[in-house]
Image (cartoon, rainbow, N blue to C red; front, side, top):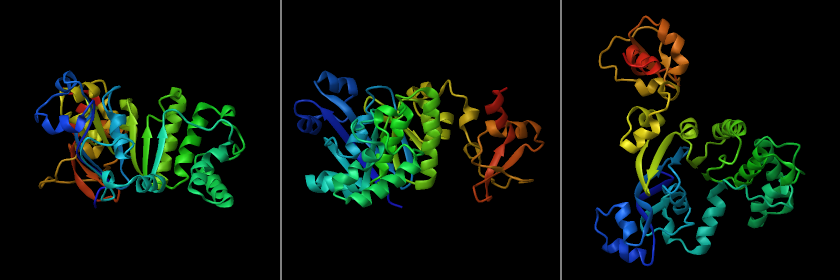
Length: 339
């Protein structure tokens, strides 16, 4: 299946004449060398695809380029080099009107700052993008009521933003972006301003919504725990480039660079890695007894693993089909520490 978003060799340089500089720049020019030349590589030769219904989490420290990259995906920034396609269409080739139509029809955006209109009620805030589309009052009210219920704010339709908690305000922002029924959803650190308990609740709510709606999502965070909890894949950025883009299991088990390893070194791997992450090809091994669910985390299998008598345990997919085997010793090493 073709990706919904496809970025190939994307550059975003900030400086006096970025197109000329990129054209003449030596191929192996590093981030610091580019900066010494008077330019900032906001995005540095990034290639990444986002599949339909996938949640790609982009993470990195402040200044790593994650927000710049997402703004390139929606062409809030024009790129300096490379290509970005959305549903097979080169977005850099779109005129302003077609670009606006693309954003209004296919893209929803949620940012860290809630950006609510203070003198409008919850329902009016949620209906606002539909008003900008020119929908009639009755149609936009019905759609706004629908998404308000979806995000758990039923009964607060007539509240003003100042009468809501931070978590409730963030729900309004999410509902507003969902009102236009976007195919692609961009979220830039949407929960980072919230208290830890509310943040956890919002992550739960977000996972529930994704289970129901199956959107294609690009989610920015600097919180590795949040990335591990939400992502189908994680792209870790540094100095404008992607250091590694892989599943949470692979990033924790097999960090590609020293920078990625530092992100993962304090993580309790048993809390992250799924049975399928330790699964090996059967290759003629004897498979006995009931399989474990490949979606189960090693931590959740702890009691079974300690009491298990089999050294080779079959692993099944969501349909119950055996997809490989897991060595009990590997799982216990992950759970208790090697040796």
